[in-house]
Amino acid sequence: MSLYDASVPQLVKMLGNMERWLDKAAEHAAAKKFDVDTLLAARLAPDQYALVRQIQAACDAAKFAGARLAGKEAPVHPDTETTVAQLRARIQSVIAFLGTLTPADFDGAARRPVTLSFMPGMVIDGTDYLNELAIPNFYFHATTAYAILRHNGVNVGKSDFIGGMKLRPV
Amino acid sequence: MSLYDASVPQLVKMLGNMERWLDKAAEHAAAKKFDVDTLLAARLAPDQYALVRQIQAACDAAKFAGARLAGKEAPVHPDTETTVAQLRARIQSVIAFLGTLTPADFDGAARRPVTLSFMPGMVIDGTDYLNELAIPNFYFHATTAYAILRHNGVNVGKSDFIGGMKLRPV
Image 1: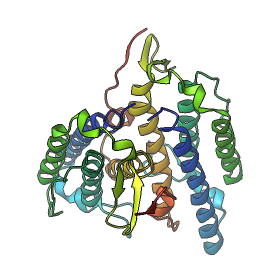
Image 2 (image 1 turned 180 degrees about the vertical axis):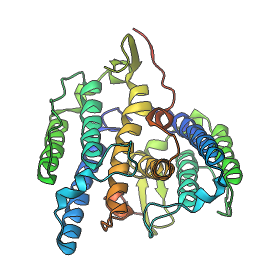
Image 3 (image 1 turned 90 degrees about the vertical axis):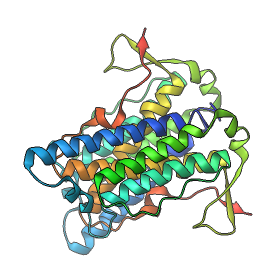
Image 4 (image 1 turned 30 degrees about the vertical axis):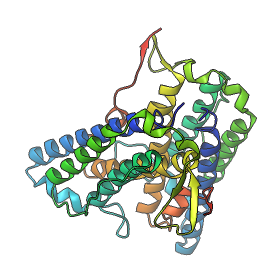
C-alpha cells in the first residue's frame, strides 16, 4: 500500500463526510429555530476545543498529512472562521489542496524524515508519522466534532461518519 | 507500507493508551470518591453507545481488523463486561490476539476480499477495508470513549490519546 493510498483519498472522503455533518447541523438548527453558528462554541468539556477549533484542527491534520508526506508546503489558514459557511470554505480549501497532490509526490514518503513544529530537533519517518500521528490526530478531531454535534441533538449516525465504501458484489 | 505495519503495531499501542485512560478514570474516581464503574454507563447522547460499549466496539474494531486482514478467526467476546477491570481484561485479550499475528500473515492482505456480517453478498478489498472502515471505526470508538471520560472530568489530554511516537534526533 502506498502512503498516498493510505492517506489522501480517505482524508478527502472524510472531509466530505464532515460537510454532510454540517448539513445535518443546519437542518437541526432550522427545525429548532436557532442560529446554526451557535454550535461553533459548543464543547464537551470546558478545557477542550470547541466545535470550531475541532474542525479547524481536523482540517489542519489532513492538510499537514498530505503536505508533509508529499514534501510540499501546506496552505496557510489563520483560524479566523466564525461561521459554518466559513468552516465549509476551509474544508473545501483543504480538499482542493489534497487534490493537487499526486501519487508520484509520495515516492519516498515512507522514509521521508518529517519535522514537526512542536517537536524541535526531532524527526519521524513518514510511515510512522502517518500511522502514529497524522491518522490518529485527524480522526481524533473529526470524531470529537461529530460527538459535539451528536451531543447537541444533531441527527448524525455512524453511516454519516464512515460514508461510502468500495464494496462490490461477491 | 505493508498492511501489517499500517494496522497491528498502532492498534496495539492505542489499546495500551486506552488502558491508561482507564487508569486516569480510576484516579479521578478515587479523588472524587465515586465508584469508577459508574462511568461505564456514561454517554454523550441518549441514543449513542455508553462508555462500556464504546470500549467493546473499539476492541472489536481492532481484533476484526487484524483477523480479517490476516485471514484468521477472531476471538469471541460476548460483551458481558460490567466493570472497568473486565474491560481491561478485554483490551488485554485483544492485544494478546494481535500479538499472535505476524507480518507474513498479511501477505496478500491488500487484495484479500473481506466479508462483513452486516453487508451480506458484498466484499471489500483488504486495503479499502483497512482505510475506509477498520481504521476510521476503531478511532471513532476510541475517541468517543476518550470524549466520554473527558466530559466526565477525567484528566486525559491529547498526549494520552496519541501516546509515544518513533521520534528521533535530527
